[in-house]
Image (tube, rainbow, N blue to C red; front, side):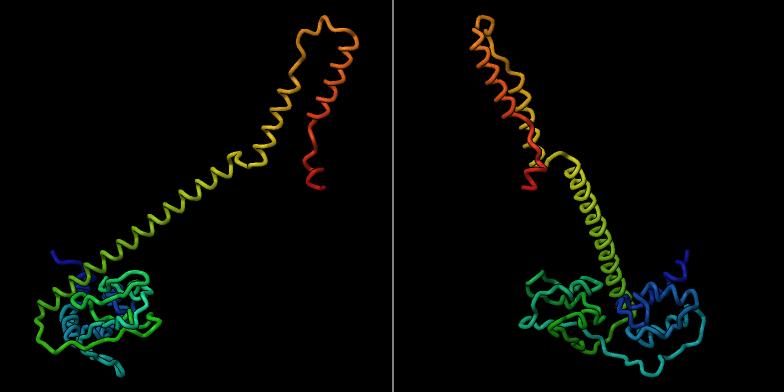
Amino acid sequence: MLAPLTEQINDILPQTQCGKCGYPGCRPYAEAIANKEADINKCPPGGEEGIHELAALLGVPFKSFEAGVVLKPKSVAFIDENICIGCTLCLQACPVDAIAGASKLMHTIIASLCTGCELCVAPCPVDCISMLPLSQQTVTREEKHAAANAARARYEFRLERMARDKREKAERLAQKTAALAQQAAAPTDEQTIIRAAIARARMQASAVKPQNTEKLTPEQQAQIAASDARRAQAHAPSNPDAKDKE
């Protein structure tokens, strides 16, 4: 059973994901060709050999590249490690994970994985990336398609990893937001806790009554009454708003 036309076209494309065709990747370009929205001569990395393959698949005449299109030899990126500042911008730009490195550490190109898309060159803030042409060598059609399939597998894996990282980041953010909302709803305000403790102490103090007072003289009872009055006045609720104004 034949694969859908888009898949057959995509199998012919070089899988550099370079965007030189005007589309954000090889598959979007393949979809545009299948929908007759794009010509078959928009992929410089595929060369004229790629155009011939697309023409044969679609049963249309060969159409050469438009004027002004420059066909470059197969190249790989190279990072001058003496200049690299470890900004990671090239890592973020590489569609096939062909760059090794970490933040503030030197980066390097894994030449065997590099497709020569040049997407890492422009983002570099210190211009330490250059494209080095590979030595001319005969590559069979089978070898070229095998390299393209390997590049596509790395590209698709990268997309899956980025989507997973995005989901996990959103989940962590949602959990943090929920925790903050729960914390805000709980009565953890320090002033509130202090005022509640003072109120409980005042209630307990006001509930304390002198014991064994039935045999006291009137003078002693008067002294106790005066003491109770002073204690009640001392524990009388204060106006926190008034203190704040002071």
